[in-house]
Image (cartoon, rainbow, N blue to C red; front, side):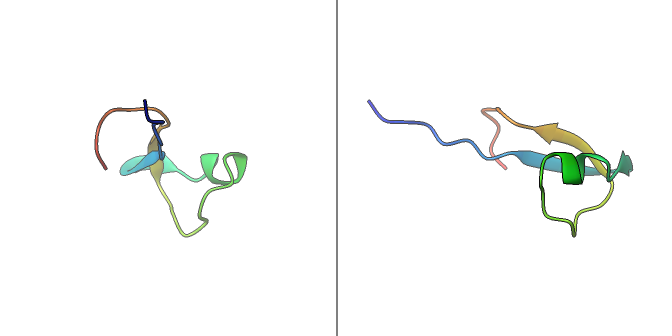
Length: 44
């Protein structure tokens, strides 16, 4: 059996904001983040 590695997918949208960036210690070059997918089977 092998382990799974997940990476968050950040969706930048027109109605998004930047309040989640310091909370999740993300790259501060992002802006207008509207969704943060932490665990998903969807490929980036």
